[in-house]
Image 1: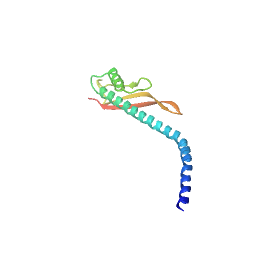
Image 2: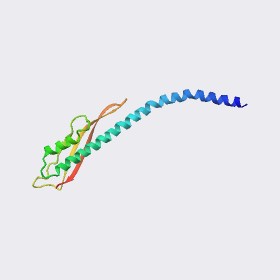
Image 3: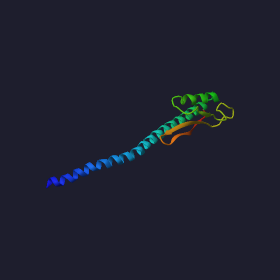
Length: 138
């Protein structure tokens, strides 16, 4: 009697292997797409943090009394040198520097840069990342 009970279970196990393979084949493209989306969003977040750090670095230079707009934008560009973006960064220095006679209490530097996001089956999308940095004048 034990043999008769065991055989139908084995047949069910063998026949379900094809169904499992078919279900996996249906789910695999969705999982791959999700994986690529997570990777691209992680890279975009890392680049967003790099833009914010570059803006803070530019604001730190702008807070020094001996700085000018070229120094600020050069520091922002050098802070973003290790990252790859779609085009050069756009640096917006403060309208009034800390070295001016009517110096403000703080300065704000804005940085924007284009970032290319590629996700399979959805193509490429360019997103503008913006960062700002604030520092008190010394």
